[in-house]
Length: 176
Image (cartoon, rainbow, N blue to C red):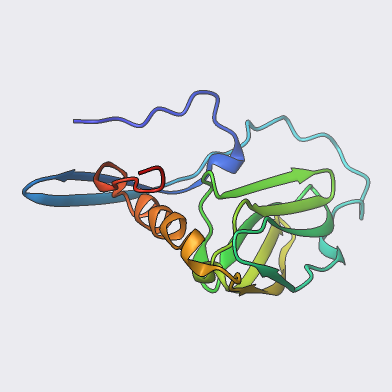
């Protein structure tokens, strides 16, 4: 039996986690959703009307980038209590990884794609929620192929395989 232990979890660690076991006989997969909730604090009395549902101040902006480029989707959303956000590509939740990082600083919510590839194209959404409501903003990502595709083809293939759990089966031919 194997265990995934998250030391000092934060709400950003919430998401779907997948375990993939691979050997010569094949592979086995299982996944689970993990929800990390903030510690509850005693409710302070609030001024009537001071709570607000999420409201978009700055929408996400569509982008067209060259393959392999860094992408930053950023929006500004206010609300009280502070909204929590989740990111989706199409209807699929974007999971945090070395390629996808989600952050919040004050009212700014951000998704960073460290290297964009054609399979990352699509509609990205930020869905923000608090106890008073939910709101979303979306934008398109278009990834333009680079001039010399052969130079980056192996890297993209390696990333696609690694993200699908085949890291141990990849042979690196870049330096031979």
